[in-house]
Image (cartoon, rainbow, N blue to C red):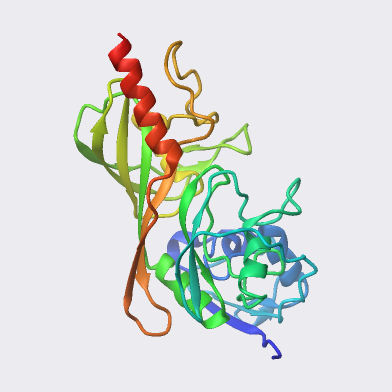
Amino acid sequence: MKQESADFSWRVGAHDARDRLDVWLSKKESPKLSRSAWQRLIRSGAARINGKTALPNSKLTAGDEVTAVLPPPDKTSMIAEEIPLHVLFEDGDIVVINKPAGMVVHPGAGHRAGTLVHALLYHCAGRLSGIGGVERPGLVHRLDAETSGCLVVAKNDDAHQSLCAQFKARSVEKIYLAWVWGDPRRPSGRIEAAIGRHPIHRKKMGVSGRGRAAVTEWKVLEKRGVASLLECRILTGRTHQIRVHCAHLGHGIAGDKLYARGRPRPGLPSPPRQLLHAWKLSFDHPRTGKRIAVTAPPPDDFLAFASQLEKTSLSK
């Protein structure tokens, strides 16, 4: 079946005035495209300001109407791979996967095979939405390679746009489990701290007054001496949000080599990956409107870590 182009339209708010067009568009959740991809589209005339052609560095003004017409996605050259997937929910419009830790979500530098996308191309026989581009078919959101758990994928463009709109409206409920070092003083809390790119380490994020608003609600589920199990509910979806917020709280995620350096102390268990798990995901079904709630059971390494902590405590 021939795929059609997709039309998008936005209105620039006062808080976005003076932003560059390419930067502003790259922050959009739907369609989720890189800044370089938007630059190519802008130069081709596919993205405009008030109906007029623009440049990637064109400055926006409050009230401007920005439109984009995305061409039909090119046929992917990626080869589907028969990789086992743990499916939590599936029908003709969506599939929710319990992504294992260690699996990269989409192709990129150093990861041209064995990704979740390669597995999905086989599992869904190529029936995935094309809005995300040829290397990210079906992807509505992402998880870090080392993060496990719930990830929803769209099988068609209508489902993709519906899910993206729900993520943008913050109506998707996202609850994570995280083992963190230390014992928080309070049983629960709310972190409201903007997150932006680190000024020096470009692969690292951090709390920044110039970043984008980010909100995480947390509560302690278990305490195991030197570490605690937190339930984290994120109201926004910034890059590395829970990892950055937990470190900002003073309780970095166990096994997180980027944000929780210096841990653990000698004699404590050393997790092979960041112990962060996308536990629960709830959203409205794109076609029926029925609320869908899925849960990915905690992985074995979460249970093993708890057991190691208990043994460490008993040995003292």
